[in-house]
Amino acid sequence: MSVFSDLLNGVLQIDRESDVIEHGGKWYNWGQLADTIADLRAALAKLNLGRDSRVGVMVRNRPSPFAAILTAVSTEACMVSINPLLPDERLVKDIEGLRLPVVIAEQGDLDRPGVLDALRKAGSAVIALEGQLAGAHILDGFDKPGPDVRLEEPGVIIEMLTSGTTGAPKRIPLKRTAFDKSFVGALSYEKGRNPDDPAKLRSGVMILSNPMTHIGGLWAGLTCIAGGRKGCMLEKFSVATWHDAVRRHRPKVAGAVPAALRMILDANIPKEDLSSLVAVRTGAAPLDPEIANEFLERYDIPVLQNYGATEFSGAVAGWELKDFRQYWKDKHGSVGRFQPGVEGRVVDQETGEILPAGQEGVLEMRAAQFSNGGEWLRTTDRAEIDEDGFLFIRGRADLAIIRGGFKVHPDDVNKTYEQHPAIREAVTVGIKDRRLGAVPVMAIMLKSGAAAPSAEELTAFGKEHLMPYQVPVKFLILDEVPRTPSMKPALPQVRELFADMMADEA
View 1 (tube, rainbow, N blue to C red):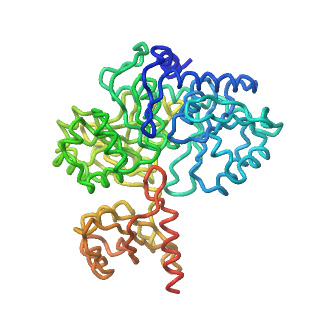
View 2 (tube, rainbow, N blue to C red):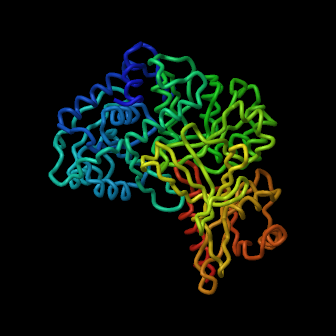
View 3 (cartoon, rainbow, N blue to C red):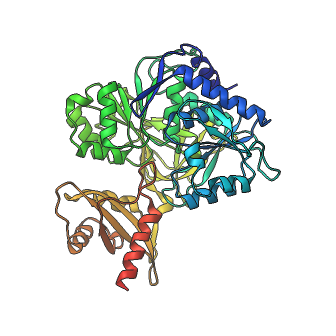
């Protein structure tokens, strides 16, 4: 069994009457969680599914789907993450293509148009969740897998959805050995936590606000429960629900993605309402250092960024509180240092030559949690590592727009325009151009109360601060850009907005 399984099985038995998950203003206890997990394990056993069997879970930030996640990752199965936030048509298509031996879902999702037909066509057995932590049962007529299902994924613990920032979400297979090592690494960020510690219940409440369809939200939920802590589960982030949860539960640490942090600052929450916090953790997207500075100045709360990805089985680098207090002023904009067991280096993208400290190139890493035989893993991130081991992420190398032979990095353009006094956030994408191959265009969100600059003003600002080929050819001012569930800008949808804009002008 894994470290995670041992800790989960241990905490489930300590005190059945103690509260563990708050959702929608109601508390559920450890006994209800343990009984639902037991029901799910019994249902899986009736289906005669062995080790490494693929178990689909329609993931929602609710207690019962969370119990299904805990069941799948603790029973040597391969959990396949399904996102029920997809529109009906896309959800049905996804289910049909997965050909899972079994799917666990809430009845409400099973009742959606086409879902049961898709499950029948795929040959999937179905386990229906009964209310919130009220049990589970095998659905009549869906009591065994069909002959054409893809039964197993040997050695894989989760087929995890990516965020879908740059294209359609895809599933990354996370190896069981990598998962366990990554889980142990995640514990290193918690003061006083050691993976060898026996299971026990701890005080405090974690605010679980990030979607568990993605790696950051999943890790938060797993470390919360395996650590014996209570969790306040928010189905969807909003400033009002996050603020209310922090004010009521008084956590020492809370999390929010960078876009959410900007929304929290704009809401101007009273300082006393956040006075319990000694830090805020963030990840999933690049963090504007000015957001961290503003949190520090207004609330005296450090914002501790981490760096990771689904492909890395979670976080691989991050800030610790003591490092932030000591180094943030001098290491402004860093994502922190590598976790124990993770090595990093920066190389020339073309030649692969290892570059000296402080020089920008493409990041490569190696770690046992990658499960690739100890080989160096090349990322798509432009980065620097300084002489003290602090990692700076400069942008995505694979998002470069080639404009007439010149390379435009959207992150560089965004950061420049976000220095404009009226601009809260900028999102640059490339669109096809017959003459130049591609050109940059930009969606802009304004600061509260700011007057909208004209296109001429925005072009002039770009020419003043950028190379001519970096300046966007079109600007679109929006209240908000389309976003993924983890609140990153959804670049394909942003690109579609400009395609529509160009069509209207044709």
